[in-house]
Amino acid sequence: MATLVFNAEEIAPRELKPALFELDGISREAVEAHYKLYEGYVNKRNEILGKLADVDLSAGNQVYSELRALKVDLTFAVGGVKNHEIYFEHLGGTGGDPEGLIGDLIERDFGSVADWREDLKATGMAGRGWAWTAYDWDEGRLFNYIGDAQNSYPIWNATPLVALDVYEHAYFLDYRTDRASYIDAFFNNLDWATVNDWASKYQIPPK
Image (spheres, rainbow, N blue to C red):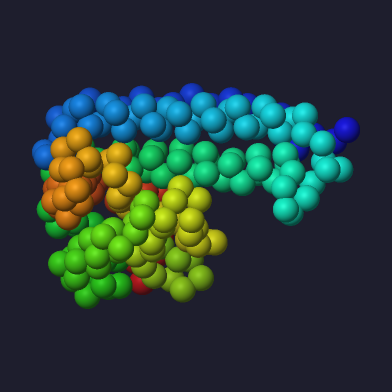
């Protein structure tokens, strides 16, 4: 029987930077609880890939089949891994207005940092799970995208550079239902040096 996960390997959760435990307005308790959820996504990704190794390909069905269930849930688990790795990695800074390449891109594509921040915050308030600033390689520009879950709604050929988690688990311990104040705290803790490193690594053109 053919296997869907030839040579698949398990992954381990990435460790948090020490700076993540000393954020401004986001408590250590909230970060630790949030990290446990991320670990769960990693574990489920590994578990699902293990089950896919033995799934019956001939029984695939769009109404229900084990293959369909595992494939759908894999997108949720992998999305949870990738989204949270971006989220944790680019926190731990001092926020403020970005400089360098990402600052230039934001100014070019949103008019000003203030307009970008207002748009991303509004997107985060409207989303049910995530808001991302991503570079669309086809359109050649940044855009703030909305997501209602770990696996919705990814845009093909777009690279996320800022990932704002707006699930309640990200802020309820600190802010209860005050999502807006949590988003402000998120901005205050962005590490723009990390985002600039990504923009350079991906060779995003400045014009």
